[in-house]
Amino acid sequence: MRRAAITLVMAAAVYEGIARSGYFPAALLPTLPAVGRALVEGLLDGSLPGHAASTLSRVLFGMGLAVVVGLPLGILMGRFRPIENFFLPLASALMPIPSLAWVPVFILWFGLGNATAIGIVFYAALFPMLLNAWSGVRSVNPLWLRAGSAMGADEQALFWKVIIPGASPFIITGLRQAFLRAWIAVVGAEMLAASDWGLGWVIFDAKEFLKADLMLASLAVIGLIGFLFERLVFGSLERTTVQRWGMVRAAKG
Amino acid sequence: MQSGPGFAPPHLAVSPPVQGARWRAIARTAFPFVVVGALWEIVARLQIFPPRLFPALEVVASAFVRLTVSGVLPHHAFDTVLRLLAGFALAAIVGVAIGILMGRSRLAEDVFLPLVSMGAPIPGIAYAPLFLLWFGLGNVSVVLLVGFVSAFPIIFSTWTGVKAVKEVWVRSAQAMGADHRRLFNKVILPGALPYILTGLRLGLAQAWRILVGVEMLAAVPWGLGWMIFGAREFLNTDVMLAGVVVIGAIGLALEKLVFQRLEDFTVVRWGMMT
Figure 1 (tube, rainbow over the protein chains, first blue to last red):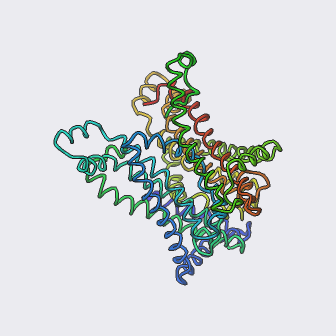
Figure 2: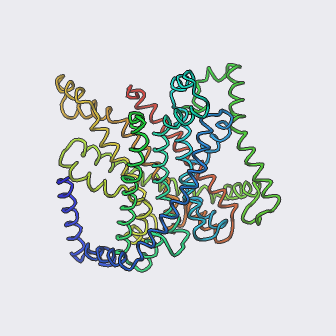
Figure 3: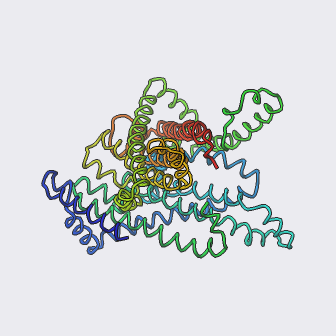
């Protein structure tokens, strides 16, 4: 921890030295106090929190849709062979297309703004969710299923008590990957489908006015939100489900 | 999932029962595409949406053929792949070097790990305007950004891989009189290779995911991203969809052809696949 702090302080000092040397224009390479000032100003006048809120709401909405569609479909694919045979080739064909490639198409279909951004987030988050749910259900040890039915569990009990906990490490991994993809997709979609609000739009707009300080401040906010989600949301989700159900070993694999 | 029909040994492919099973497998894979294609065609023919925005499949196909014959589409695709490879090569060289350094030297680990951990959670495309500001519109920014983004997973995986080489292997090699170079070439590199390959795979996927978007932002004259973004101005949905199909095909080819081959030739042969 201390070593990390020393490195970061030294890196900051090197950066500050280069920025102050006057070798590069200050508009392109702002000093750290300037970035800090842009960050504080944006936070105080409410513009950065507003942009962050609209970016987050797009991510959560798109991801929510992806979970609602991808999770049940993935579980059904894992349980029923014909459904797997139908949807797996489609998913494998669509998955290698980066979500950002759809931005121009979605702009034409849904117009500039929220619908396009949410659609791109949905596309980006859908496949990690779907495929992880599918392989999670497939990976449930058949012995557990047989033991469960031998002890008199019906279909419903088997599903909630064996299949869901057994697949949970994969489902959590799916949520994690979905969020990472969604986070990339939303920033790109906001830059391309300009909509006046959102952190991606702020960064892109700041380029037009050579406001590198505002850009770096927004980058810090984007990084911080991503980091917090990864640590707090998914970390605690894992603790309340996977670890409690004693599935940790599988999650590490 | 692991090996496609193309990898089946020839003596298996000609025997009749396998042939039948293979046809059935192909038919099973094709079936969902036929269903979705038919649905698309029906919706397009009924003109529920304006045909300019929702073209029929044969319109997309004819756009694809027209652009391919005139050489426009191959040129776009070629430039995109070239940028991907240039950026990825940069990331592979720098990333593996930093990763190995971090795994072998405590000082390098202390210096790089905090910096890499801080940069990693920021989505690569968020840096795009900054790179455009620093390096201008065009190829330099795109290649540098793609390299920068795909370097993160490569560094992390290489570092993990070098750290994961079993201490016993290193010590027994030293006991048998291996010098530093031999130790590195014969023990550490093969031992870390599965991780390095995973890192390269993740890095390439990461690069591919943002390259198309960056091309749209950077206003490069050629490239698939620019092609589909430019087609938006003229409502050429058919050109866009043809471009999206090519993008998907390149993505699939990268995954299936490049990496599975590479893995067969190195990791599997050295018996490092567990």
